[in-house]
Structure formats: C-alpha cells, structure tokens
Image (cartoon, rainbow, N blue to C red; front, side, top):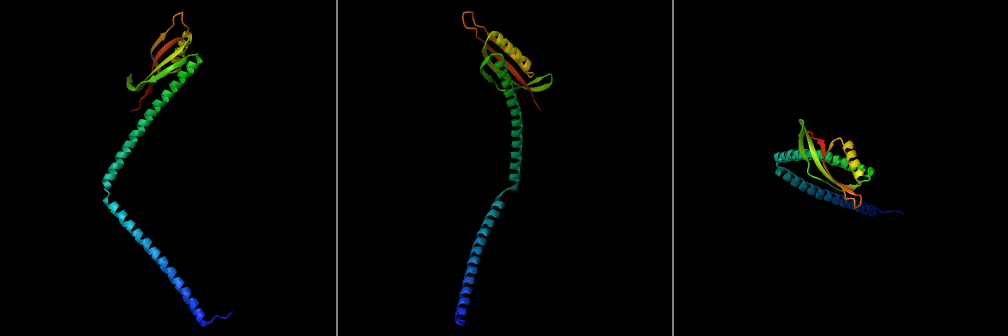
Length: 182
C-alpha cells in the first residue's frame, strides 16, 4: 500500500495536533495544580504568621507540667489501688480457708499519717464477715499474721444466742499502710 505525500502530511499534522493538544492539557492541569498549591501556601503562611510562638511555648510548658502531675498521681493511685486489691485478695483467701463469708467490704478516703518520722498513706477498710465463732477467730488471726502492712483497728464479734443457729458475725476495721514517697 502506497501512501501519498498528502496523506503523510495529513497523518503527521494530525499526530502533531494530538501531541500539542496533549501537552496543552498536561500544561493546563499542572498550572491549575500549581495555583491551588500557591493558594494553600499563602493560607498556611497567613495562619503561621497569626500564631504567637511565646503563647504556644507557654501552653506546652503548662501541658507538660499537667502531664507530670497526672503521671505522679497515677503512680500514687496505682500503688494504692494495687495494695487494696492485694489486701482484698488476702481477705477473701483467708475467709475461704477458714469457712467464713465476707458479706460486705468498703473503704474510705485515704489519709496521710506520719509514724516515727516516716510518711505513710493510710486506707481504712471495713469488712463484715459471717461464720462459726471459731472460724471467725481463726480468720482474724490469719489476717493479722498474713498482712504485714495492715493493722486491725477494731473488731466486733456478735455471737448468737444458743437458741438461734450457730452463725456469728464480725465487723472488722483494718488500716492498710503504704509508704508515701515525697
């Protein structure tokens, strides 16, 4: 197949037009994108110029102080919380070992105490237990032996009359001491 010079010219001209049209579309897209980027850059620069760096630095310092305070509080509360869990586990284990049921347990707000020049955090824990009188006595004795940082503050045992069943109850107040770091 033989193509004439006019056909070659038309094909070449068509390819050049397609190439120039493609370049024009590419150039137009890039120009539009560049204009959008320049607008974004101007907006970002205006926002940056409106920021007061000293205020941001001060805010960062305040937030860092708050974070340090919160972390210290977390560490202190975590220790108290874990200590309370350990004591609760010992209470329930001792109750189970002595066939005693703990029917109620509550704690109050902790307080700071100084004993012989050392600071401690004291947490008052109230518990009510029911069971046989001998088992209750064994339970209290085991608590006193198992918990080295706990003091039995008060103990009240209600012994039933001989006419009723043999279930006695005990109201126990213990104080949990935890070393307070300063």
